[in-house]
Image (cartoon, rainbow, N blue to C red; front, side, top):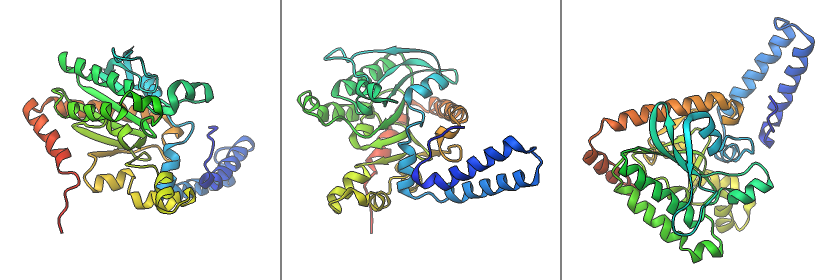
Length: 314
């Protein structure tokens, strides 16, 4: 498998090349090949079993990591994309539509990055404009009307901070989503599949169940932004990532998310089929659980879940 290695993965990449070269010249039971494969597996477990927060951030941003539309293609059947916020335009950074996940009809909303320069310009590097959040809310209200659950797949460095977005009230659009999602009378599941950047992620992140992929992150600010503020230089991003407690394990420990979805060793991009299968099963199981909860209790639990965040005692 041709996967672009990150800097900290280079020793593993060298071992993978060695194993591949041996496999071309020797039989599978050859002692030298068997030993090389054992060494590779040992090194993989040592590296990926002890990733630092900054290394997880790098994996979350890997250029071949599956994006929203990749999961839609693999996990969603009968998908029909819906466009526009009925106020300004259609935001390509926030595709959304209706389809089935594990047999469950639902509204699916997500944030989409690009694979190349042209697509990144089209998708605005995964940073939605105000019309993206208003389109998401329009579809959520449609889901409520037709009693469909909502599934949100989060992957954004943050909402777009440009002049046009400010002119069209990006902060207000996100704030309205927070308010309306809190009282939306239908089950909501949110999954952070890559980057969970600040209000840009939270704008579609108020849910009955908030899940994260193992190597995703969810934070009020990027490590580079935090480093620029506290250390005056982005070279301190690794220290900032550790201080921010932005990994899935940290957030689950704090009670800010409800579960962590494991990834194939090395990240979701290493085995996209296995990752998509597990994501489908997890979302379907979660939707089945939420469907059994009476609506009043669902709304009360959702409110209590977010209301207690930030409360602490000494």
